[in-house]
Length: 141
Length: 193
Image (cartoon, rainbow over all chains, first blue to last red; front, side, top):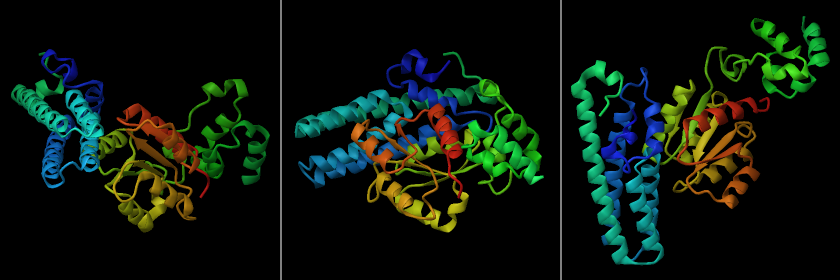
């Protein structure tokens, strides 16, 4: 059972996350969690940089778009599909030069970021509770 | 002995004559049995010819057991983590750097050890395309195959990279199967250095 198949997380994670899960094995037993931790640190930093840029460089849509392109890339690599959609929506708003649109997209993106983090934290917590024997095979949720 | 191999090679090896690893392994005694078997396959049997594990035969590695060394270049931390794991699980040795500039530094320190460069296209300061150009313009580096990755599926961009000498162009997010397949092919296609 892959995480992206589980009902509560469907839609938040896509097939690409399954590819990441497939890279986990006995040689790298915590790989998925490691990638997820890196992703949230990195995306948190990118969102923070973008927020600073929104303030420091008003209406600099090219710059805002460049930040968002980086974030979209990370979301895409890990399979964070809802976040990726909000990134794309933000970039569309940059293209249309709509400050209000960009701000709205960013708020939605931050919300999706928080939701995904919460869901994944719960999932990994559960894995840890189940213990090494249980973690070797993914729990049926 | 070498004359024997030469005769054998030219008499039956024509369809396989372009395979760089076979040229290089002609003198490798420990793989002679496998090599002869491969060379003596009839054309219609070649589909089921024994496959020679490239990591064992390619003398690009410093020892016969050493797996190929891939230099992965990407400014995205998440992508470096994923590509690094992906390559290691396919049994490659990996060095990751976050910029074209650092890639060139690594290559200047020891280009003989790098069998493949896999690089993101969109990077600040030096793009993957710029890095590709620098590699192909250098007499020492141009033999190293370069694979480009990009999230933008732009035919113009793809054409430009392939024209400049990129081995292959991967659309992100990359799949493990894409990377291991392409790395195997790119390393096998390496000209003699």
